[in-house]
Each structure stands twice: as structure tokens, then as C-alpha cells.
Length: 374
Image (tube, rainbow, N blue to C red):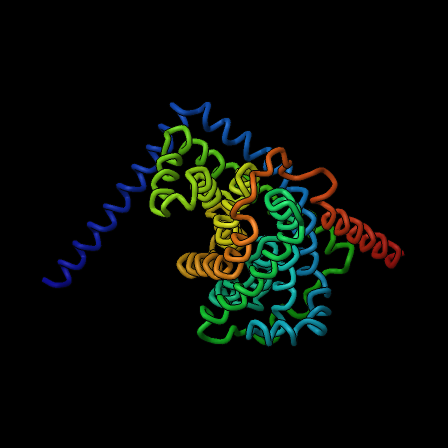
């Protein structure tokens, strides 16, 4: 009788899940049919974010990440950086390339290196999930230009946030990695591509990855626009503002809610708020990274993503620790500062400086590879 009851309980849970799945699909279909103007507006806003922020600041780093994984550069970087990374994160020195790309390339760059290690057999899916707890950061170019200059009036404040984020990530990695990350001996060695082939493969792979990232941005931008049309974001803002006694304004709470769905959209809204509100919202938001970025990270691993529960815990803890480090300093500096209206989301030519340098470096690599083949 116990086994029959257990089976019936399991069947009931599955039926409930199936019902909720069908209900969610039906609601999504209805939203697309009856709220298509809002969905279209959200997609257009997402396209603007992709064109102004995501592609210029991220695409070159995706190419570098994939080039690093396909060629011997990753092995060469282990020598000067492996010891430092091993001491800081208590991880194998072979993870140094993934950590480095997570520092300089933005949210999914480190994950793409880890996914490459899983694909070649050097890292298990479980160990990649552990490494992902400290290999997700916002890129310094984005923080300096979009957040530092656009919200707080100086790129140095963006770099301050970047430092707090790295320190918080090291703490999160030590808390969540309860056992050592293990590499598979002899795996992933000797399968490197020559530079020119690695470059071609990296461009192709990064292009597919960029399309996937932009797709997540469009989906969550459309969802944010729908929630705004239905008044749910505004109600969230009013309720959260009341809970904080007005310290966080309704507009600041809406910025937080939008950013939890898609971080770039939240940062764009923060540029129209007083910097004090940005000080309350952005440190947590930038390290949590948004549900859009979590989807992007999972997509790097194809049909077998890391454990979602561990990834969510890591993002939440990363956001909390970054906020504890950065918010008191930013609030003390900007609590009474007026809003910096009129700032562009990404000034042409400034926010993509690192990306331009990366493109120049990649052209140099390609030229040297072609010359070596001749």
C-alpha cells in the first residue's frame, strides 16, 4: 500500500507540473496574441540594448574566450596565472584561463571557457557548476562606462564596483565549493587547433553564442515591457518602496525589478535616477546578473547545464556580498546627489575601447598565423 500511495503521489505531482506547464504556455500564447504591441516594443528595446551595449562590449571577448579554449593559449596562461588563481579561489591552476576571461570579458565569457573544458572532457559537468560559482562577473568596460560614468559620473566608481565584485566572488567560491574541483588527468591535452583554424572556429562559435545571448535579452526585455503594461512592475515598486520606508523610491524599485529580469535594461533605467538610488540597487543587481544572464550561462552548456539551484544560490550570495562591500561607500558619497539625466547608455567609441583593442589583437593573431603558414 505504501508503494501504491507513493506512486499515486508522484503521479499527482507530475500532473500538477504538467498542468502548470500547459497553463504557462497558454498564458504566454494569450499575451502574444492580445498584447503584441507591448511585446514588440519590448523586443525593440532589447534590440537597442543589444546594438548599443551587448554586441560592442561582449562579442570581441566571446571570440577571445573561444580562441583561448581552442588553442594552446590557455595552457600558456596557466604558468603565470595558475598559482595566483589557485591561492585566491582554491581551485586547480588549469582554471586560470576561465577565471581570467570572467574578469575581463563579462558574464558569459568565463562560462564559455568552462563549457569548452567540459566538451573536451577535462572537466565534469558537476565540477563546471562548482567553478561557475566564482567565474561570473560583469565586465570592467561595462562597469566603467555604462555604470561608472553613466550613473555615478566617473568611470572610477565602476572600477570600484568591479573590485568589490571580484572580492565577493572569491568569498562565494570558498563558501559554496565544499570540495576541491577535480580535473580529469590527460583529458583536453593535445587537441589544440593551430592559430588560424582556432581563430576561424572562435569567430564562428562566438557568433552563435552572441545570437543566443541576444535572444535571451529580447525575451526578458519583452517580459519586462509586458509586466510594465499590466502595472505589475509599478505595484512591485510601490510595495518595495513602502517596505524600505521610502529609502528606496518606487522608481528605484522598478529599476531593480527590471534589472532582475534583464540587467542591461535595469542599468539603463538607473541612468535616469539619482545616483543614491543606483547605489542601493546596482551593487546587488550587477552581481546577481539577472534571470536573462542565468539563462545565457545555462545555454553555454547546451542540453546539460549545471545545477540550477547552485547557480541561483551563487548569484544571490554574490549580489549580497557585493552590496555589503559597495553600497555603504556609494550611499555615503551619492545619497544627496541629483539625477544625472541625459547620459547615454553607451557613448560611441568610449565603452567599446577594450573591445576595439581585442579586435586589433585578434587581427594581429590572424596576421601572424597566416604569415607563419607561409
